[in-house]
Length: 268
Image (tube, rainbow, N blue to C red; front, top):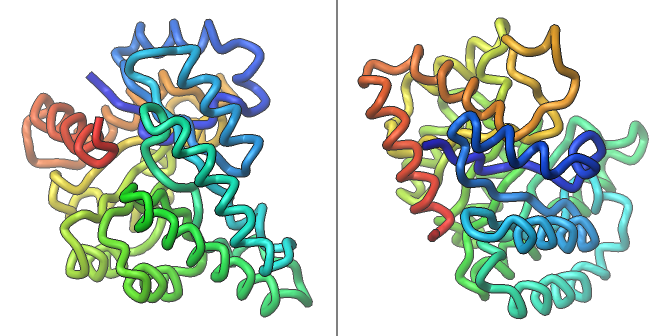
């Protein structure tokens, strides 16, 4: 069985055909999913899916770094209070904080310093909420590995997943040295022909630290890119199958171990 540990079913391309998306998942043996919040309203929509789909479906609550970089940093505390209310009322379905993190690729030219600082403030606020509620953190990082590592350590975050992993093996090694509760999730990027550093990391990591995801509706796996422009949770099967080609363990061991990792990380 396969667990799509990071998708956005409320997004354009998926939200209008969720029944079909669910059927496609089950047909491919993708039996569990977590729908990731990227803002307060999006977190509520992710929760709606988790409730509608029932068993084997969960969600998170958080604000994507791209969505916070133009906000007033002083609003972070107020927003975290709103997230806490949502989470406390739905602890059975909301299993992590995020996605949060740092994305320096998408900062606006001329406003880089200001926006990076705001992202760090909101990332820190998410980290504190995760500690307060004893929940793991779903981390987005792009062109910001050094600051991501620093903030995780400064705030004592030892339960987190680096989603859609696209950094180098050294970043992963530093995080593993920091905590045994840090996981690394691989998306369709793993299957791309030029993603050699990502593939090398997937080979080198301990199997017990690996998750798989789609980040649907984004990042269609390579084998499907000529046919589909919208990714969906069913396509986690293709990420898993590609991961198996990179590992020395038997295919069934890879699938079973990643399944166990996913359930352990989210506490389900």
